[in-house]
Image 1 (cartoon, rainbow, N blue to C red):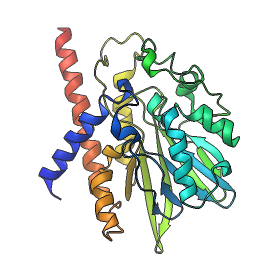
Image 2 (image 1 turned 180 degrees about the horizontal axis):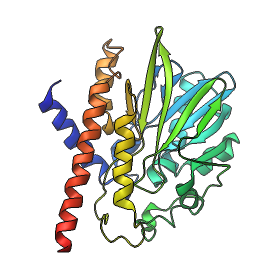
Image 3 (image 1 turned 180 degrees about the vertical axis):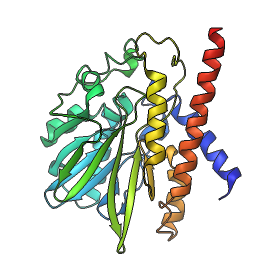
Image 4 (image 1 turned 45 degrees about the horizontal axis):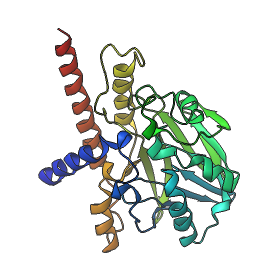
Length: 291
């Protein structure tokens, strides 16, 4: 592994993602079109350059993970149709977290497709209020979005099943109260592969990890989330943002014929360890500042 290159990738990811929840749709990487492609098995990438969306194709319909911005919906629809699927065949809509850059488009997608919306319990109130009850961004109108009704409340460890495909929802809270990391298994060229779609591991600017009246257990949730992530078996490393898993670099190699570029268990563990260290460093800083 090229450690220098890996460190540079982490730095880029942090720069892009730490401002994610307070940035606006004008961030060009959030809406910049990106080629659709099959990741493995029946799993496809249908997002933009930075805001990741994933399509799972089953015999009984489609599962979409992340609706992204409201402005992202036409782009996601086009990407799904480019793959030869029908947008209206989406049966289940899932998200990685209740921040607007991952779920603002949900209401429109639900209207157009009639899909059922599955959301982790701590995020239900946030998505149904359009972000107005978020523990940190509730008073920032730029992060509000169209509310969407949740059809099914997910619990930690719950499995979502459709057409023989099974996805498991792992609560990895901290970044927000309902941050969800999704796992599934796919088969590629006869090889079973564990897929991990990281929900969000970053401490955003301004987050209070100590004495947070709106989210008292935030530090404990972050710590537990990293413990969960570290234990997940991972072959294919993905995430809610392309920068989490080095999408640009990996796709460039994929496009040149490197069909196994998204198989990156070492990169996954290194990323989780790096984000844990960043959290622990910020926690130590805030604890010291209290004294």
